[in-house]
Length: 564
Ligand code: TEU
Ligand code: CA
Image (cartoon, rainbow, N blue to C red; front, side):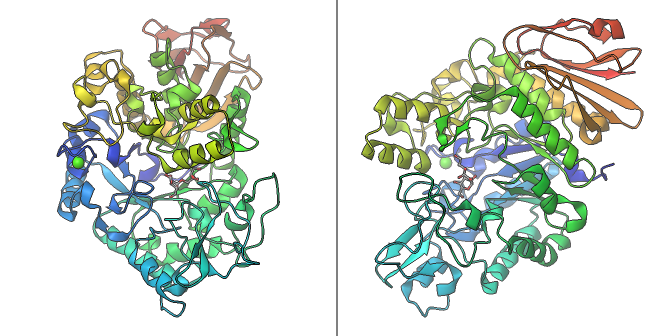
């Protein structure tokens, strides 16, 4: 049985601050904008806020390239604004989680400026520098954002490693001084009242010191070297050290972003007795629609995989460790467009997916705009796109004379800007996000999809989220109950039971737009089922066992019953 912890009981809301709310008309969201929406967050019922990076940054990757860990980015506001935000949250019983990006810094960080200045600078070893090999890069690794993972610096005639863009040099975690600088910085923020850290690509910090060539998988000059920089052997040591030096001294909630980790490996990170992290963001669900060559290749996802992956994580972390649940964030297309239906059944399918996220064992995370069912965007021209990953892919695609139509189609479907369009507050120009010109255009559907409208409509997705969140706070079974998959083989229905103490909960989700029927397995007995939540107004409020024989489900219907 899982131990009770406050962070298991929280519901987390993620803000991508550039796109949340602009307070001063410069077109970029900021801290004062967030402060102006604190009552909204409280109304929603969440009890933890995760803010994507707001530290000083030249914004090559929108804050994931930090030039000073202890300062607030000028566009976002000041430290005084941050303090007001922290206090405003705490007075509403909402905790604050900051993003911790320590695999790399910005190339504008003082450490890197020093590091590149000469080979014998004391900061040289803060980053990973190597001489070239036969006039070429030190190895064949590709960058996550295209091209080589190495950049030549003519000043000292060596290359530095950057797994992400060339403006995001990787820190050298082998260097103890670097590690202790980071621990000090984490303590500093914790002393300022931060309640948790979301750790960006935290399982990439331990590179294989040999930096071997990646296996060759295709004809491109650079290859994916993940096996040599993800989950490296020294990772365990670093995380344990971080725990001893920082995490053990505060009551923090930690979530590690970890690509390339399955439920078995997750135990290494989150088993209580290991003292590393509380939970992970894994990529197994989000990569279901990646093709063999990666995210820019289309593949259809299948419900069977959904069930297999979620069930595996639910089982393996049931008693030790903890799960997190999310289907969208700032790096992925909108959940309703990707796994639901963003036209006829937008409302029904968004609610159905929300039901899944809030009725599993684990901590749910929702991404701004998800609570009103914001959708992917289809900009009319490439000039509207901002994301470095998307733009690099487009440039490269053009060079390789890829079909232009095909390129734009991929961007529309998979690009990260889908999640980064401004939050739609009301039907005034730019959706009420800014009085100026937004840094990225608002999705034209803001007149229909916006917070103000959703608040007025009792059947809105927003009100449904409020109810789900309320239920989680009310019923411990939703948080702690164990999980049993039903109807393993059903291709359209996802259904499971949860048990906690004397209680049993039954969740039934029709994942598709075709109607279908549900049959309760005969071994499950109960007298009366009481409806907790549903996305159709006339679902039976009370059921008996015989009702669950050929129980018909409409498009994307979701219902949750408490069984007695
Ligand atoms: O993302 C890590 C990561 O794995 C991404 O490259 C992801 O695979 C990709 O965005 C999917 O399209 C984190 C941050 O969440 C992301 O915003 C940053 O760009 C990245 O790290 C570098 O800090
Ligand atoms: Ca602003």
